[in-house]
Length: 383
Image: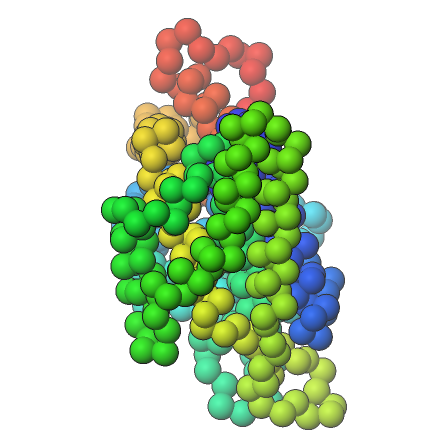
């Protein structure tokens, strides 16, 4: 997906979340999960992502390594249970165990997970949300995702791959060359092979079969683009998108981990989503190819570097700047630790990370301009 402001058609985090919720609800209806619960989990799944997409997240991950790490999924949990304000008497949104558990894709701490984890402060919360549902499940694995989380995760992969492909076609950053053999093609194939180290699947054959199915649509889009027929271009794009989403919903099955007892109050861990490996490889191939053609293009890479620079500068200013406490908005100051706190640096870094992660692209850009550009900013600007 693209950064906000790159065009009204192109997906952003918000529109992506809405699409994940739509796909997730379709999967829930197919697989016998609770559709409202899956929809809630899907709508919340990306709220922890910082500004500037992957670039902003990469920058915060690096900056927070000495202070307990940053992880967007872990940040989701922190937002809905600690940072959001709904009541004078409690922190967070007062969500159910099932909704919180449905957010937890990675049930390991920073020290264990490193790349994918929840924050150390939320380990007890994870147990509270999960343990009541798993105590009656034979052979339970503590790293299992709940059924609703598993559905959301597959919906996220599908929405990400299919809609980024559509955005790439719309922006003309992807065309019929996607299925030509070239360096990007070979790199994508190799990356997927590395991810699916499984003798049961030949990645190149899966790719060739997928392209046989979608190639006619690509050529039609190219033909209508040359003819200047934008309406037909759009129609073919939408048909291709709908066909792929339907393919990746209808290929799924509900797999039973253990037989649920008749009196069970929670079914969260008795099932998981079954997706044949061919379809998982297809989705990963689309993701990797779009990444090679779009995200690693000079146009996008340049903007991503700008995003990283803004995040680094803001973090440095609010973490180490003289009198930086005074620059925080009033509603953020109560979160800041006292300087005498023995864990002052780690706690302050977490607040700085929370503040930056909650910014939109435009908010971060405007704040950067006020702080670092001499002719930008006014005392009348709202924080």
